Each structure stands twice: as C-alpha cells, then as structure tokens.
Figure: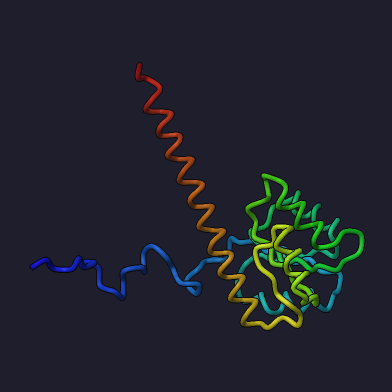
Length: 175
C-alpha cells in the first residue's frame, strides 16, 4: 500500500525559514511616505506607525509627494485622495505609470467610501484602500503586509540580478 507523502520538516518549523511572520520583519531599513494635506491626519498616521521602526517621511500634497518620491523612492506610500494641486488619484496614476516607481505599494487613505471611489483607486493602480477614520490595527497590519511583499520583491530582484551576472560570466568563454 502506498503511503501518503509527508513533509519531513515538522509543522512548527516548515515555514519558519522561508516566510517570516509579520512580527519578525526588520523594518528599520524601510521608508514609508505619508501624504495628506491635513496636518492632524499626518500626525495620527505618524503616531500609529512610529513603533514599526521604519523611516517615516511626509508630504502635504501631490506635487510635494512626487518631488519626495523622485528624491528618494519609499518602500510604501500612504496616500490621501482629496488634496489641493494634485489629487491622490493623479499621484497614484503617475507613480504606477513610471517604471522606476510602479512597484511601490500605494495605499489610498480617504474619507471617500463609495464603491465608485474604490474602483477609481484600483483603476489608478492602488494596492489597497483604507477609509477614514483609520483604525490603528488595520493600518499597521496592512502596512506590515505590504512592506513584507515589497521587501520580498526586492530580494527576488537582487537574486535574479545575481543569477543573470553569473550566467553572463559563465557564458562569456563558451563558443
């Protein structure tokens, strides 16, 4: 009789090495850009996220946000929708339309809560959507989750570059 295949790794350690939990993430090298035209909203987001250990930067409107992203690309963006000079929808579309920044996760944070607003955010390329008032646990959990995905994507990109370099080096002398 055939025995079912079994993973030789005990269940408690099966995923411990390959996928750290959200609490195990080292976010000290991560940079989060918070964009909102309301100073009180920025202060609240900063207070909610300060314990993560990530570098937190702020921008007061869309134009300032684009300048900040051009100066130093963040690992995650929390973006208000309704702002002067450039809406969050416009900022998100610009970020997602640029190959240099399109992989940065964008979370739209807004008082808008109609289905049409969520659809528009998705159409602009938003990765997630939070409605105000923001709940701390929901915000921190989503931020950690998206930062984890971002960090894993960066690791994958670096690994692929190393593999490419190795392939280039080993194939150079072969005819």
